Image 1 (cartoon, rainbow, N blue to C red):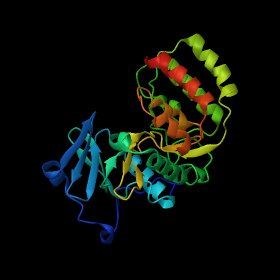
Image 2 (image 1 turned 180 degrees about the horizontal axis):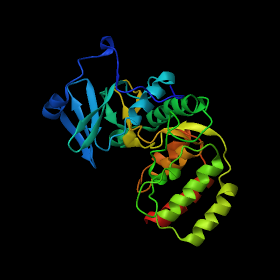
Image 3 (image 1 turned 90 degrees about the horizontal axis):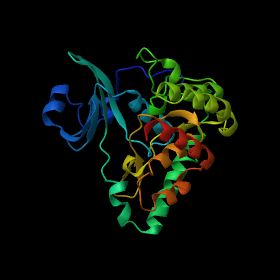
Image 4 (image 1 turned 120 degrees about the vertical axis):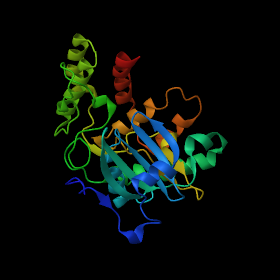
Length: 289
C-alpha cells in the first residue's frame, strides 16, 4: 500500500461491517459528540463506530491506520470507510473506524501498579519498536504514498503567506529534511543568524540516518486500554516515515507539564535519543515560548 496512495473513497466489504455505514445526515443527527475543535469533530455512532470528520480532517490518518494494521492489527483501530462530501463550506472528509471500547491511558494511569505499567510498556514496545519500526523503509521521509508530512514542525508559509510545499516534503535525503527544518524555523520567525547556525550544525548533531515508520504523537491520551489489557494507539494523523529519533523527540515534548512517572516508562516503549531531543527542544522554545 505504501507505494501508491489508497484509491478513494474506501469502503470495506459489507461482510466485515458490524452494522451498515450510516448516512451523513444520520451522523449529524444521531451521533454522540466526543470531541470538537478547529474544523474537526469526533463522534460515536451506536456501539460500533467512532467517526472523525470535518474540513480539517485528513484522510491520510485513515490510510495510516490501514497501513499499520497490515503488520500489527492490534495496534490501531480498524478502518471501515474513508470518503469525502462536498459542501458549501468546502470538502468534508470522513473517517469511520472501530469504536475501541476501553479507557484512555491518561485517565487510568495513576490507578495502575508498577507491574501493570511495565506490562503495558512491554506490550507497546513489542508492537512499536520491535515490529512497526522494523518495516522496511521506502527510501524517503514523508507520509505514506510519498506525500508531504502533516506534522506541525514542517508547517510554514512563504513570505507572501501562501503554503510552501518545500517545507513539508517528501524528502529523499536527511540533508533535505534538515534544510526544511531550518527554513521552517526561519519563516516562523526565527532569527536569520540563528537559522544559519542551525543550518551549519544540524548535520553534525542529527546523525541518525535510518528511516522508521512513526506514530508521531505517542502520549497516554493517544492510547486506549481495552478491558483485556490490550493497548491500542489512536490519533494517527501525523504518522509517517521519519528519522528514527522522531518518535522519542515528540513523545518527550508531550511529557512537558506531566508530574508523574510516565516519562520513566517511555524508554521501555521506544528507544531514546536524548541528544536529538535537546536540540529540537531548544528550537521549539525559541519559536513558541
